[in-house]
Length: 308
Image: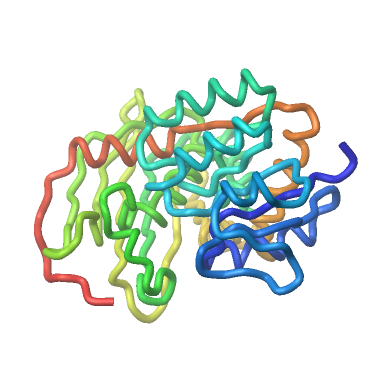
């Protein structure tokens, strides 16, 4: 395969803001069509549904699925049944168990299934992982706070069951955390704040640990105004390492050691092209498992209703 012909299914804000430009910038990838009920690109074939795309669309090799997680399972199954390589925007699904049949389908069809975690491709994440390998880690604190009205305007699905609420961005922090730490972590306690009119939390505080007892805490909040924070602070025996701006910048005791422009989604598509060339899959469900455990262990409180 010399060029991976990709169709985007679900053309909301993230697809328009990130996926289109990333595909255009990656060698070996071409955006061929769009399937969405509400949006299109003038220069590309457009279809209302994935079924129309598969039945009536131009030849494609792969689908990038950017619809809300609550509806992804049936769409993903349709793509794999048609023999298409498949990229899943994060989170990969609304539940954990629904992904097992998709993994099996991909293996049987010899198609790629790629469950993406775009924040792991932020430029300072790998330097942070390498730096931490040689240090003794004492504690970790995550502060992931943003204004939902800025980053998710009008996205009502995020407040419904399976939409994850504040864990939609919070899972990005967990994907970075589980990449940079040398040992697996697990949730030990959680506090979840639910708006009175929503089925998903607007804020969450988590306590986590690894098998040796490393203390890890996380604060997620959708109510942040003013400066936004996407930071992970790691105290070590050789200084404080801070990953900021979602992983774009790494500093140790205030000295910047890694910083580069955002290329997260380009990294995803480079990886997708690489996987599809061999038919291999990449499905890491650990960040989603941590979120599921937070829901299972979480002590719930009701807060004021959310009005978009």
